[in-house]
Length: 193
Image (cartoon, rainbow, N blue to C red; front, side):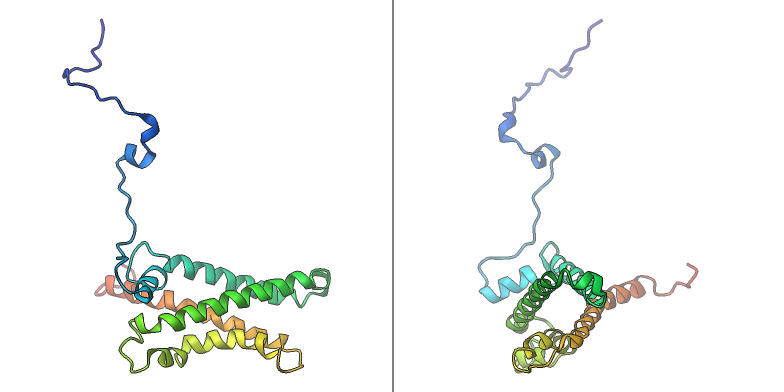
């Protein structure tokens, strides 16, 4: 007894395997964020990097890497107080500090530049000034200030680097909207439900 491989007698189509990728075979469409390249550069950059309302952009990835860097700075700060670890790797701790400050400065500069596009500041008369005096921007500035003050004041300001830990408060940017969404979704329910 033989089975017929093509029971409906329809014509089979040959596929060039080199021309087909996995997404095509699985029927998955390429779906990225729908960000128009026709808009001004600042708006385009904001949409790709900091806009929390666009799914698929780099906002959550950037936030995640900043959080990881904050946590690594916390561990570095703790390990600096262990002479057996700090002394042999003093140069590596310094390079990590320079790298961290450079990333934090770039983030601050990016947020400063893109402040006119941010919903929180765009309706202000001077959005960048409003950003500079916002609580998160002040925390960011306090986190990088000791590194630059060392260039002007000949005092060891490493102890002030604990201010970098204030950046952990930036986690509230993620937590507060999540708590609000949770409360909204569970409105009218008891704690047990």
